[in-house]
Image (cartoon, rainbow, N blue to C red):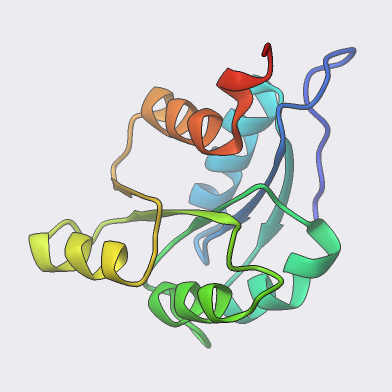
Length: 138
């Protein structure tokens, strides 16, 4: 499952489940978030995500759209339909950048939509915001 800790000695900013069938992209996202201080677990597709979500208990899920077995659209819908997972924040990270794709993501309850190629700083900023890391000092 590849669960990583945040920076040594730092309190975790939250738990993220990174879901992408492309190993390079999956690891790129995971490493960027780990370096920022998030605990990270990974999944290779939507079915793997749904199998791991209860064990990982993520604050945020990053989700690719185009994956084998179970794509990101169906995965997001299933996450929203399940009372145990409907409140987990979901970030779509995908090459599908057309307006109707973004609209579809928001219609099914996706919290943020980032297009590939993505800026790692935008990804970190979005995940921090959704995980509530920016409000921890209250």
